[in-house]
Amino acid sequence: MSAQAHVPSLLSRTGAVSVLTLAAVGGTILAPGATPEAEAATLATQAMKVAASKKGSPYQWGASGPRRFDCSGLTLYSFKKAGGKKLPRTAQQQYNNSRHIGSSQRRTGDLVFFHYGNSVYHVGIYAGNGKIWHSPKTGAKVRLEKIWSRSVWYGRVR
Image 1 (cartoon, one colour):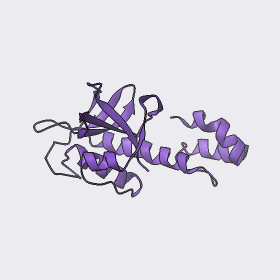
Image 2: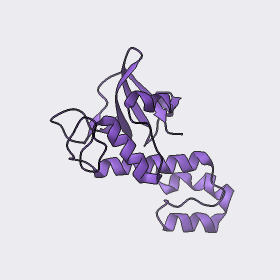
Image 3: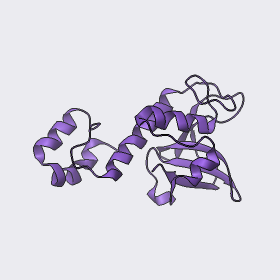
């Protein structure tokens, strides 16, 4: 989400001078009094950028970076690097510890969980436009890919 999209809500909270200062530095610094939801959105966006920076890193089962990743290792690494947020190790544990949201509520940086029945087997970071950053499988590399299944749930890191 761009800094401009936040201007009306920030304007009412921080005043024009703070908004202009915020816009001038690229919208990455939160104004005093920003809501926890806004802070979480910034963390999630930064985590997605960290995941994107790992494009081309090889998959390795059980790996959580900085050079090799499995799916949940990439999400764990990305959130930790983005703001020190510690996620559980497995995709299922990450799902269990996220705030579950509907697809209409998803936004950049939310977690996308692939499931079979009640079991989560894969996780990626939502990048917008129906795409995720993820570390797919043995022999593959971290990449941006279109969500390929309808059997997905969405979670927001708390």
